[in-house]
Length: 381
Image (cartoon, rainbow, N blue to C red; front, side, top):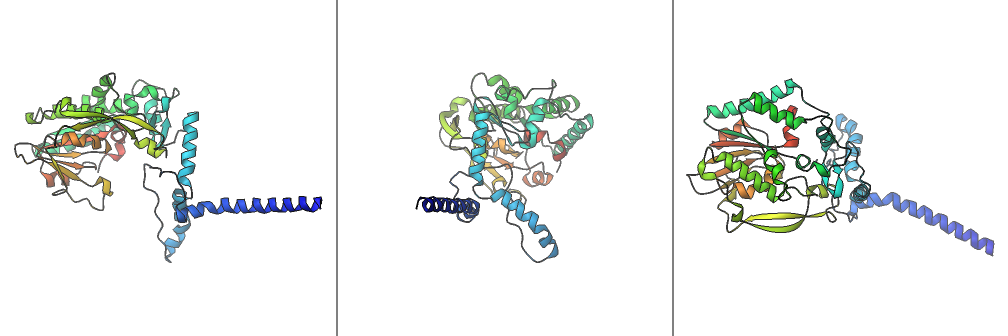
C-alpha cells in the first residue's frame, strides 16, 4: 500500500507540474485577450506597433510574419509587469546598459537616454564636424533671413536637458572624455559664426539651481520653477522688441508643493513608486488668455493628437502676435507665456514656412530641447 501511495503522489506531482507548465505557457496569451496584467502601463518614447494589415496580397502575406512578431514584441502578456520587475531590480543594483532608454543615477535620479544619446553626449565622445555645424548654422540663418524679409524677428531658444543642469547625479562612470560636448560645440558655433538671436537657457538655469531645485528626480523636463526662470529669460529678450511683454514677477504666482509622478518614472513602469516633490506655480487670479484652435494651420493627419497646434489669445490688439515652434519643454511654459500676447500659436513641429505665412506673426520663437537641437541631420523640414 505504501508503494502504491508513493506512486500516486508521484503521478499527482507530475500532473500538477504539467498543469503548472500549461498555465504558465497560456497565461501571457490570456493576458493579451483578457487584460489580466495589474501593472501600470509603461510609457515609451515611441508608439507601440499596431496590429498588422491582414490580406491575401503577396506583399502582405510576405511581410505578415515579421509584422506579427513586431506586434507581439510590444503586446506580449504581462509585458508591463516584467518590465516593471526588471526596472525595480535596476534601481536596486544601479545597472545601466549603453542603449537603455533610461539611465539610473545616484539617489534614484533617472535620466532619458534614447538610443544611448545621453551617454555619448555627456561623455563628449561623439562630436560634430565643422561641415555639420556649418550646415546647421546656415539652415537657421536661412530661417532668420526668410522671416527678416517679412519684417519678423526670430529668436532661437535652447532648453537644457536634465543631465546638463544636474550632472552630479549621473553614475560615476559617465565622465567627460573632453572639455566640450556637442551642445557646447553647437552654441559656440552659432554665437561666433552667425548673428542669430540665441538664448541658451543653460546660462540661466545653472546659476539658479543653487537656490532651488529646477528639475525633479523622476522626470526629464524642468519643473515649474525651472519653467518660470525660462519664461522670464524669454520674455526679457522679447521685451527688447516689444516692451509691453515684460515677464510677471514670481509673487504674481502662487507656489504650492505637490507630489507627482515624473515622465521617466512612467517609462520605467514605476510611476506608483517613484514620487517626487514638484513646485506648482500657478497664476493668482484668472488667466488673461483663452485657449483656442481657431485659425491654426491644418496639420491633422500629419501629427499625433497631443501634438496638434493650438493658440492662446488675449483680446488686446496692442499686444504682439507670435508663432512658437516648440517641443515638449514648452508644455510647462504655456501658463506663463499666454499672459503676454494677443495671439501666441504653438506648433509642436519643426520650422514650417507655410505656418508663418498662414499666421502672419510679428515674432517667431523656436524652442528646442538640447536632445533635439543636437540632431542636426533631422533639423531641416
